[in-house]
Image (cartoon, rainbow, N blue to C red; front, side):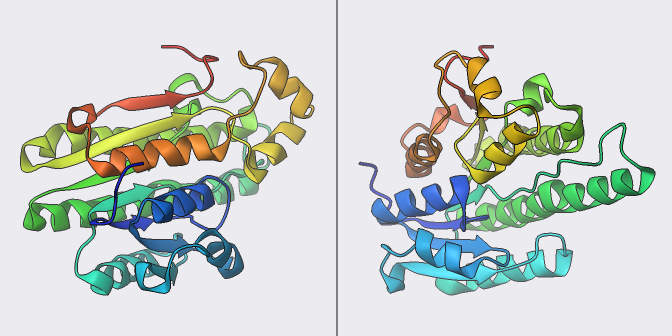
Length: 255
């Protein structure tokens, strides 16, 4: 197992799905975990239940509000005076706001998705880079999606796909420009992961059977696969992967 006992890690979206699995796995590896959540405190508490109290901090923040985003960073940094890894995981997905929806729905979904999925992560990454430059280095791990690379199969997910492309590009830009300052940045691009978000999306396109039929392994990805990869990257044991986009999709989308 990767030993993260000397790492302080800020994780956004820790209350459910992929984020909850990441929180649990980082804690098991010995990390000090700052678990961000929106409104689901019970979910964040459950995800971090096995982490001792002195190794976890739960922080609520609305990522759609830039003032809240800045407060999240300040509270996270103040806890131990350092952040070694920022895991950029939180995101929303709305199943409306597509081409055929109303102008009102389009405008609402694009605005909300851009604030939460792009502007908030970019602001946090900016703060992270500034902190890392003073601290002598650090890491960013961004959870993107395979739709950022191949487009979404459902036109209603155009906004989500665009947001995941934007945050992927921002992470790669950081990797290219700050590597000499020991600032490492990675992108993980999962396929269909077994989460409530994916289940809801599948229901909108005909059900799980339809989605599963198109997967090379014939199965959905367990969140633990993403969590294990995040934990490995956070260890710093493969620094020269910085800038890479790591696909986790069971051989369904091979580049």
